[in-house]
Structures are given as structure tokens and as C-alpha cells.
Image (cartoon, rainbow, N blue to C red; front, side):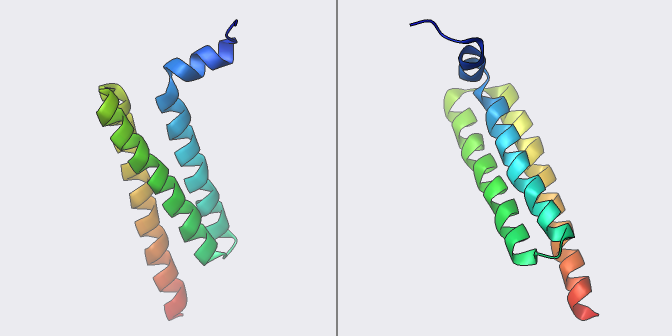
Length: 95
């Protein structure tokens, strides 16, 4: 069976696919937050974090140290922006 170029790329660079998936889930949560759908926004962002945590464990198990550092960076970005969303949500509910 002949392997396509995309399949070969995905097999050797699976960390990139996981990071992109995590970021897309998280960024869709940020967009939902902008449209005042707070509950759905937090759910989507938490799904992005869960994907990143699973990817973090998988990179540790496979010994992908560059992927580990990349995933830690993505996880830091996602947690930091969720904290910002929570502060903004508190500020909106006080008004």
C-alpha cells in the first residue's frame, strides 16, 4: 500500500496535529466568550486543555522532548487565557 504525503507527515509529526487541535478548541471557546456564550466558552476551552494534557502525557510516554516543551507552552497559554476569561466574567457579573 502506498502512503500518501499527508499520512506520512501526520504519522511523523503527530504532536503538531495535537497542538493545532487543542488550540482550535480553545480559540473557539475564546470566540464564544466574545459572543457572550460564557458556559459554552468555558466548556470549549476546557476541552482544549484536556487535549493538551493528554498530548502532554503522550509526549512524555514517547520521549518527544521538543513536543513536550511545545505542549507545555500551549497549556500555559490556554490556562492563562482561561484565567483572563474568568476575571472578565466576574467583572461583567458585578456590573
